[in-house]
Image (cartoon, rainbow, N blue to C red):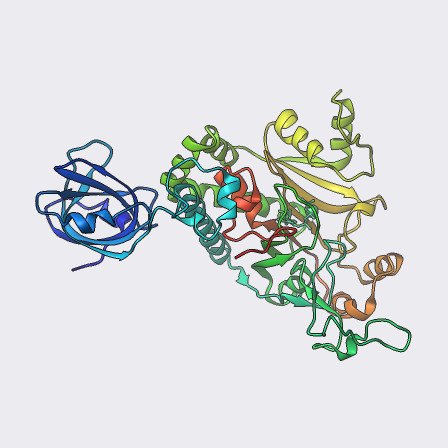
Length: 461
Ligand code: ATP
Ligand code: MN
């Protein structure tokens, strides 16, 4: 008998045809005459209803058809008489693959998100996390499709690196040294020459620097991979391990970069609206009544482009009491970003031309000598979703700033070399995949859009 996923089964015309369906029991109810089993196989938010005629059923076996159990049902696909579903399966034979007794933690509905986080190894079996992780997959696919269709190359940058993408975040060391007996040099420092790579290495905080090497060879590339930051910030928007998408393009200036970022996010959101409507509708109804409206709003509007200096003026004249008052030169806090996006403009804002002191060394310096061609894309409810810039392509200027900041040319020499031979204007940005997912799913905590979150003091599963 042909195996059919429930998502496909629900779309069939019921003609009493034989079907075999496998999945996990969500609920069972019924009476002396008939039992109804709601079965889900993860292919869709919707369950298939299995109808069991008790007159011919094995009652002992049915006792083990409990919430969480895994079963295989053979039967006939018929039109459903009950409301709520177009088709149902009239069961002829049930086989139990795996029982689930009353200790199964997902018995009743309505668990708190905190509790579900504690049982992250089981939560994908809930409606909510099934929906979130199907959307996560769809967004990953959309991202590859977007860049592939535009002629970008998927470029793999190393996860273990000896270069620090300057202050992007604290790094996790990678070592095979015996931590109880660390080799030391004569002056007492750690002797990394005895380590696996014969130098100090860490998990990457960004693939950008190596991404630039790709762009200056293949023209336009993107990365999409895990990124690690050992920042001890327990916020709903930070993970210690997250996925980042970093396109990098030769011959793009800041204007081109902004246009690409806007087109890219809109494409992803539209893809979700076109392909994930069942799951979005569920999340909209359960968690966030304005979710779908907000997604449509972002696709339809033009993002604001705003100078940092102008942003500071607006914040100053807002008459609002911020927890951290903000003047020219300071880095914007979440409260400032959200004021601009949610209250002042009421749409996404691309903030550009930041003071050079608060931005990274590789950003292109403006003629004013004070600002750099940086851009942050700020989103409702999220704050910063993208950070990017036009890169400094001038050897002398880049060299000067590396010296000014006392950075190590021992690890960055190859990056400088790209400006020595065939340097080209280029730009790029980084999108935090989980920040995008927060926006698209309406989830409030970044721990709930990745299957196994890594945060301070938590690396379970
Ligand atoms: P933030 O100010 O929000 O901490 P950042 O300025 O340190 O972010 P960038 O270095 O610009 O971030 O990284 C690019 C993008 O990666 C950010 O716009 C964001 O979407 C995402 N990102 C950064 N840090 C994290 C994190 N710890 N967890 C999840 N996503 C992150
Ligand atoms: Mn940033």
